[in-house]
Image (cartoon, rainbow, N blue to C red; front, side, top):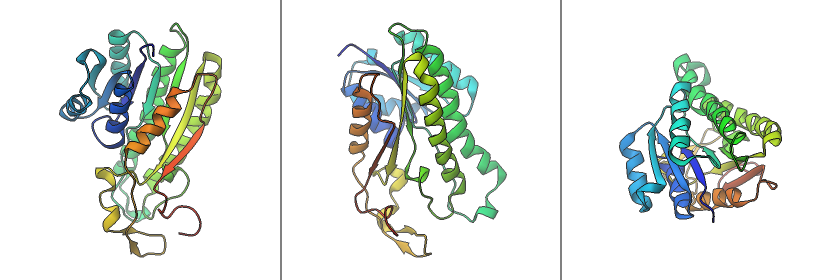
Length: 250
């Protein structure tokens, strides 16, 4: 394929790392963005590709100046941007809604929602002015964009908001040949979900083990979404452990 360029936020671990490695394996040039330079370098090393194909950029997506630097550095290095995977995010420890500190709420909103918005703005500015014009944005929504877990108000609220951002981006991007879709992921096996097989709180107040799936299935799904021509789009995709408690009544 003709070389394409992607930015993956939260590329230092978990889903972001798996997707970044998959994109590099498919021939993309990839800017790896995240807070920890050492973790980004580890992702680059694990990909085992030419250093010419990888750029690591320490970035806090909740800081618009940091985000601007990420996109300027990517354009300066690779000349264009074809794909943005808005993946970076965080949550709070499970706790009653009324006990969540304001600072914790604001930190999650900055990372999960404002960060995705800042990155989308910068992507639009590059994609609409490049030749060939356009590109694709994929947002990591989460099962929590549909249904909450107990004691997860900040995370769940921001993930519901990502759905609105996805729809608005898809609509506003039409003018510029920019497609936008969302992948909602349930129980991919990463450090974040390590506690699931041991037991996590359920809606009825009980604790129960939950199944997980290999994170490579998420990477493969993102690759499929990214592989489509810009006149076709997966607006929403759900990839989940088959037996996790999501559909039905538990």
